Image (cartoon, rainbow, N blue to C red; front, side):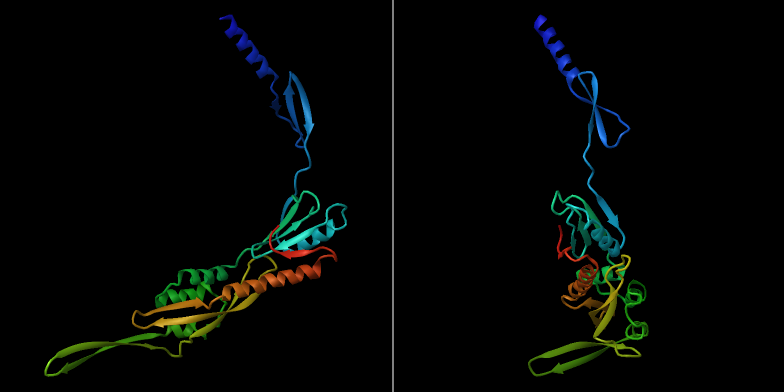
Length: 255
């Protein structure tokens, strides 16, 4: 009984001596109650995690920190963002990031390659008129698709010989449009919607028509999506080289 009481008293003593954090008003320090006395401990400088909304701000901040001793800024860029590492020679935790947001039209083209959908005439018109608005002259494809008329007919043929008899039906389908439906079109598509990054690039797509089922399909040609996105990224790299102070490197990749 006595041993249990002593153990309980020892446990209370340890609990009383354990540090307990106290609420404080100073965001640059923490206060703990240790042995019944409050003690304040300063915190280190928090890491910079800036986000900017245009490429020119990344360049401006990189040039600003180029004159600060010990910073040695470095810029990384890829298809998703541009990141300035301010303290590349130190902890590499201070950064400035500019996110590259894909344009809706480019997202639509990417989904066409992924899903490869066949579309009814009504849905195909909506795709060209709304989802890809401004990417293609309406006279090239949209107006022709609007006026498509489908014609279907059947022809029955029979063959009789001494040893056999056969009867077959051949179904013919035809697309009647005011202008020929092109097999290839070139969309002019913006890659990004971020401020200052809305330049458009020419992207080749095939146009398929299935007269039997009365449907259409638009597909980007192989590697076209990667090609145009790389052109947009190369343009960003060129502007970094032009705008950054001499001696500030920029790399295609991620930190």
